[in-house]
Length: 201
Image 1 (cartoon, rainbow, N blue to C red):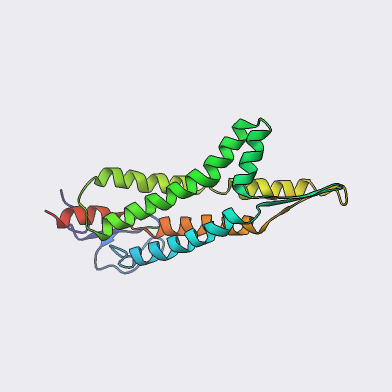
Image 2 (image 1 turned 60 degrees about the vertical axis):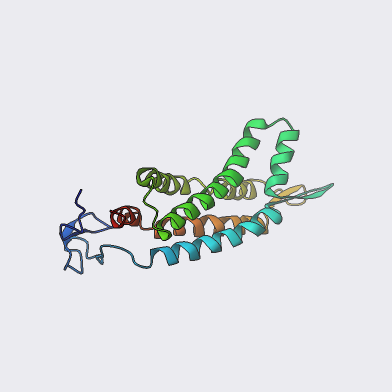
């Protein structure tokens, strides 16, 4: 099996136009051309660590601040899931738990697995690893569900002294964690998976 680089070709990552390896700028969109991102893993680890750090306050600090005439309550992500279960809203609680806990943690583990497999030059499961990368990229756009819910509630429930809903510190931390994780996934050069396979042959 021959690769584009073996054939002396490189594709633009922005528009897909194929050029010879000695071409520095895409003739169609004027984007910079390079066969591989040699700094990919460094950027992946940097963004991933930043995302994991931001995820800690996202779970320890309140996501939602609710004030009424009689009480003031603060809800963390897990606390909100527990309250939803206690009130019988199993479906919503499950969605929040999956979107706010399982998916972010799953993305962390998937990116760590991909980065380590390339770093260790593992030749195994190239197709599965590429599918895992595509899944992480696809899921990234749906990771802001908690932030969207908080934003909608904050905009709708503003009844002055009767009842107000405001975002907590965790909302910003969670948003940052999602953004950093998306940047980490985008920084990963999936072509490195196949290069590792070729170096073992």
